[in-house]
Figure 1 (cartoon, rainbow, N blue to C red):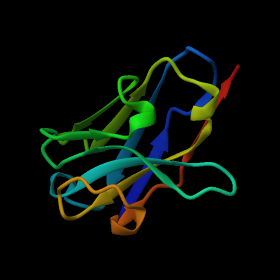
Figure 2 (cartoon, rainbow, N blue to C red; figure 1 turned 90 degrees about the vertical axis):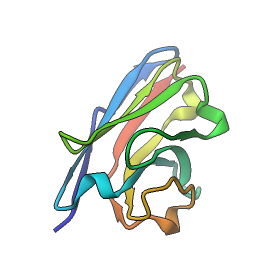
Figure 3 (cartoon, one colour; figure 1 turned 120 degrees about the vertical axis):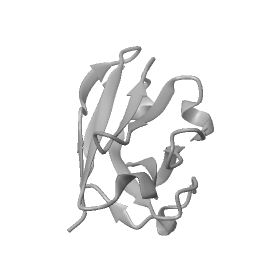
Length: 124
């Protein structure tokens, strides 16, 4: 049974930083590209960042480019999202997801597995 478990969310002031973590189990982690998405009430889930199976390719959505860094540790079955200079508009539930195609895709429908999400709240 595949499990993705996010952690690291919380309440932070604008300008602050958070590091989200996602622990994967039940899959051959290095066979999967990983993505981070976020969602706010009433809106569609949106792509934040993605990393290919080896970590050699990264992709960021424009709103977070330059402020976020995605990384992975295949030996530990972990993927991370370092978020700096957070803004109130970054407030959302953040999800990690796994895609068997190993390359980065940005549409939620293309991902095979999802975590339960972790709340990030940025106060102004």
